[in-house]
Image (cartoon, rainbow, N blue to C red; front, side, top):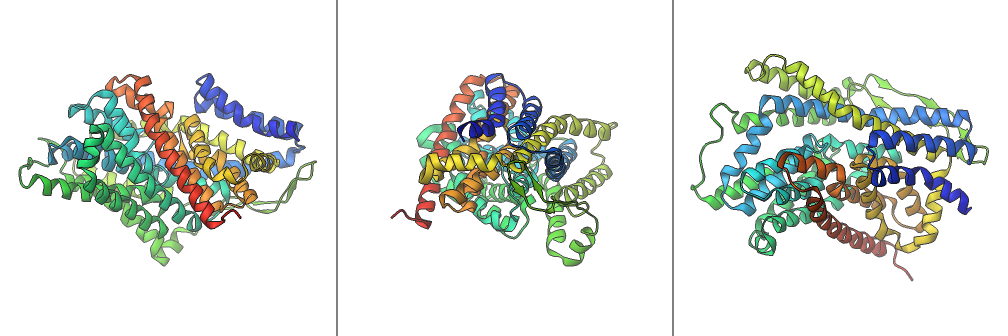
Length: 514
């Protein structure tokens, strides 16, 4: 039994060792973990060629389902950024207030969350950090504020790619997962905002700006919760960030009481209202697709669907027959993003905001950014599905449940954080660990929905101090990586401890020990 458990754990340990010990990238460690899972499943757990082949087919469909969003999200971001929309928003916000604490909240928290909602992939840190340095923040402080501020929006950011990965990895519906995940992330929203203020000016800044923190935080967390409960998971992070920006701008205007600079735009830049038009278009498209039945039915006419047979290993582990992950080709969140990108491109092209070669530049940059993460995600999905079909995930869950028992709720957020720390991605963490968290929760008598909410919230916090993201943030501003990682990790660990305690209390209240 012990040898089987160690064997089942080996692919995950291998990925951890390669990424943390040898500093391999996900594009290198992912294929290694996938190959290890294939070999161990075949040689130790009796998975025949049919089991392995169908596991790869299902894994490929799961990967395509998630990657559809990632590629389209990158396209949408580059179309808006190339026109100057991101620059216009980022440069317009600091003019609203001279107060450094409010500037940190507006840029590091609200604007960073908005950027995470529409892009992700390290963009919030790379964009917000230089803006803060330009306002006079030290380089390391700027990286910490940018890293901490946007992290709460990761699950429903990147147009929902991490949440879609959670759905894909567990087979549960988004409707049942959305509310507990959004509630848990609402708590982290407040903690991230408090961390931004503390980093900007210590306890004095936190207590002086506690009221705008609470007002903005309630608006951000509440907007995200409302949107995702209504089923619009792909725009949850974006709407939360927009709500924070709206409330933060109103607060800054009120606090300045007419003393702020009136300009909304640089000499040849874009006005703030025009900069927000693409995101209004995206919200409108999602609303039409989700809430108008004729539109939903029209877009859902073409579906990629594969029926898989019942599969069994030589050791008796059975995977029931069923439909592999379906892909709604024209109604998928990735397709909705593509429609918004096209409309935005036409709008800004007619305004003359794109120069010669813009299309090639956008396409080249999307491919350059998306290819590495695509390979890492595809192979890690393959590893996770292979382990599940060979019975390895269930065996790991049994072992963990015996070791930690009732204390598992306290460990759940840290497992999610570990996955994001080692891969730099909450999406990857949800792919690798969601099924494991779900099965352990069932074995120890914990609500699996609570465990999965803790998984994705912990993953969002773990990405805060992931080496890959810290490096992305430090490069543009010349900050010392070790100092930035040490400080960012402190904020991340404090947040994770609070998450663990809250998860433990909720689990105990739902199922108190005798």
